[in-house]
Amino acid sequence: MSHKSCSQHVAVLVFPFASHPSPLLLFVRMISAVAPDVKFSFFSLAKSNSSLFTKCNIKGFDNIKPYDVWDGLPESYVFSGNPLEPIDFFLKAAPGSFKKGIAEAEAEIGHKVGCLISDAFLWFACDMAEEMQIPWVPLWTSGQRPLFIHVANDVIKEKLGASGDKDQTLEFLPGFSAFLASDLPGGISTENLGSPIAVMMHKMGLKLPRATAVAINSFQDLDLEVAFELKKKFHKFLHVGPLTLTPPLLPKISEDNGCLEWLGNHKPASVAYISFGTVAALPPHELAALAEALEEGGFPFIWSFRGNEKDFPEGFLERTKQNGNGKVVPWASQTQILNNACVGVFVTHCGWNSILESITGGVPMICRPFKADQPLNMRTLEAVWKIGVGVEGGVVTKSGAMKALQLCLSSKEGKEMRERISVFKEFAEEAVKSYGRTTEDLNTLVNEIICRPSKPKWL
Ligand code: U2F
Image (tube, rainbow, N blue to C red; front, top):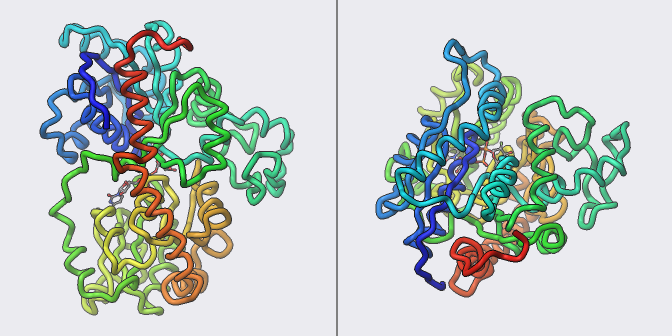
């Protein structure tokens, strides 16, 4: 990896919801390890910064400094239970909140910001960077396919027409013949741009082609065909993932609710790990159906669960504790669990970080997607990469869950999925080696953009 002396001040603008801040910090740590003289000011909400900067060990990264920005909430605000509301307030306060933060950081550090890195969602960073006449590098925290969909938004709308027929295939897009309009995120498959998220994604799709470079938390060999198409859309398209594998690695978490020790007593590839990420939750009847399937089929399991325990079938938690067949924990060290050879399947909502972590752990997936990129991710896992299966009918039933668990844990198809996933795992490990493509793209980012000798021609 090439090193360079460069005393640049980089502002990092975070989308502080769901799991978004974590990959952005991993990205900054990775750049910082190659360009240790660069100062990074990391702008996010106070709550997110305080959990991220204690959870992630940033010892040795004195050049990354968190700054809290205003959340935009009125003083009298009381959370209504609608998770979109705080996002709406946050977006309304931006970009002013970020500009204020940047002015403070510049005064404190004594260096003007010379490059803007942001979550790709924060489309307005494009205008900020253009005003400041500095490069803009957005990080897309999901996969190649959802990114392609957002930049091909207008073509899709034109082809699908106003009716938005859900059963229409997307064969007019390269590499998408197995996909249906119903796999698309809201705001693309329908004309309804009503939600703040849909508006944000639409604006993002328009601005990303103006970025100096678009970075993605993925590796090129995972989706070569779509990566090739994306390269045509952007000035530069850089694969910088999987960020959980890129050096410097985070230290392993020692507190894991006893999951790893418990796993140690099981046969290889026999345990189901269940988690639906940081936002999604199974409705009560699906939760009960999954619990019943696990019990009746005698499948050993670890369940990362943050919902209402009353939704489990009566006595389920007590029986599980007594017979030791499973563990229900409020939070799991997911990457470590998925890297344990005893785990044979991951029941997931198809959030991108979970997918990458399952691939790098070599674990096939049972998919129960909810919204946004998740249905598209599921179709990719099932129909393109063939390393996952959807639950029958799109919702969890006891018989559907049992079938999917049996298929993944004890059938020939399950074994074949594991073999295919091990090839992707190898590609991922290759990508982050000193000669790998991810490392190559990181060097391009540092040498040509962050520590650039002169203004790149597209600025
Ligand atoms: C949004 O996804 P989520 O944040 O809901 O889900 P993931 O992308 O899968 O990320 C969840 C992360 O939380 C970690 C896990 C992942 O890194 O390892 N985790 C954990 O460590 N322990 C636990 O018990 C449970 C989770 C969005 F909803 C998706 O549609 C997007 O694809 C995604 C990325 O943009 O963001």
